[in-house]
Image 1 (cartoon, rainbow, N blue to C red):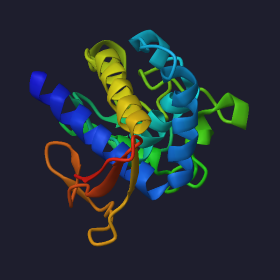
Image 2: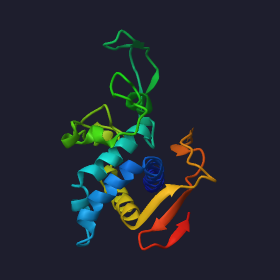
Image 3: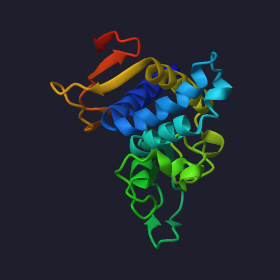
Image 4: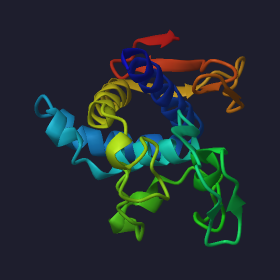
Length: 209
């Protein structure tokens, strides 16, 4: 459980920062929200979870780049299972949930391949989707009794990491090593090429990582 927690948190953060590098407008909106909160005092975990645009960016990253695209909901059918769409799962078949296919289905999500955090903002006409398993359109942590026990810790940890990275630094693309969103499926869904970006401290000190 420790490995899966650290692995997926790191991957989700990398995917999210890659999208912010490519979508500068989203990065600016997120920084504007953080500037209005973090400049005055140390932000608690509870306060970060209430920042709507930060949470929308995390949800959109979970939708476009679910760290676990094939959820570990593997089940063995003991009898033939007849689904509502007419399909039949034969007896003794192992079935898994393909969350990647669900989150990229144009019948469920408009412009599924476009990175649009506003789809999760009520103020922008979106919907406040709960990613903790109550809405199966986006359930990256699973659902029910066997949902990921670390989902709340994971969301808080990513919120803290991203908030600090965006508040303290400007992230832009390194044109010598442009961002590549190609995926590779290992134990989790990883970036085929690690993220490279130019990072500038908002105190005007630059670095490349």
